[in-house]
Image 1 (cartoon, one colour):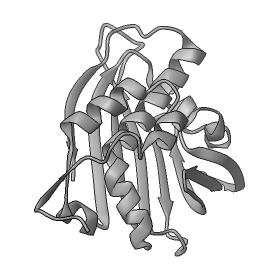
Image 2 (image 1 turned 45 degrees about the vertical axis):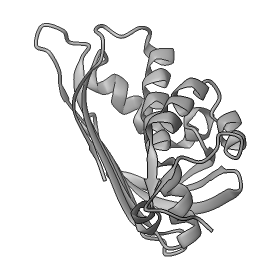
Image 3 (image 1 turned 135 degrees about the horizontal axis):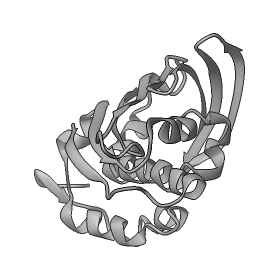
Image 4 (image 1 turned 180 degrees about the vertical axis):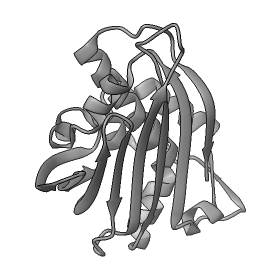
Length: 207
C-alpha cells in the first residue's frame, strides 16, 4: 500500500513499455521522471487541462494543414492507432479514433470544427471513454517581417469516466501533452522544411 503525502514518480523499469512506445523521446521521459512528483491529489483528479501559446517558424496554413489532417493522425501522432474521418459537412466532420498505450486501447468519436486557416477544434461527448474532451488549435499571424511564422494556441481539456483511465492519464499527463505537440511540429517540418525562425514559448500552463 502506498504511504505518505507524496510519492516519487514511479520506477522507470515499471514504465518501460511506455518508454518503448515513445520512440525517440526516452531522454525527455527520463528527465520528466526525475523532476516530477505524484501526489495523492493527482490520483483523484478527473479533470485536467493544458494550454500553450508559442511563436513558431511556420505559416498559419502550414500548421493548419497538418493539424486538420485528422485522417492521417495514426501516421504521426503518438498513441493514435487509427483515425477515420466521416460525416463531412460544412465547417467540419466526425472522426473515429483509437488511442492506446500499454495496457489500454480505447475508441472514441470526436466532432471536429474547422475554420481555415485559423482553427481546428475537436470535441468528444460520446459517453464511453470521456465525460468530455476538448482539443483546440488556433493560429494567428506571427512576425510582420516574417510571413512564414505564426502564433499557435494549443489547448486540451478532458475528464475520463473511468478511474483507471484517469489515473493512467494523471501519471503520464505532462509527457503525453509534450509529445503530442512536438509530433505536430515535426510533421510540419517534414512537409514544409526547416522553420523560418526558432520557436519561442510565450505562455504555458497546466492543471
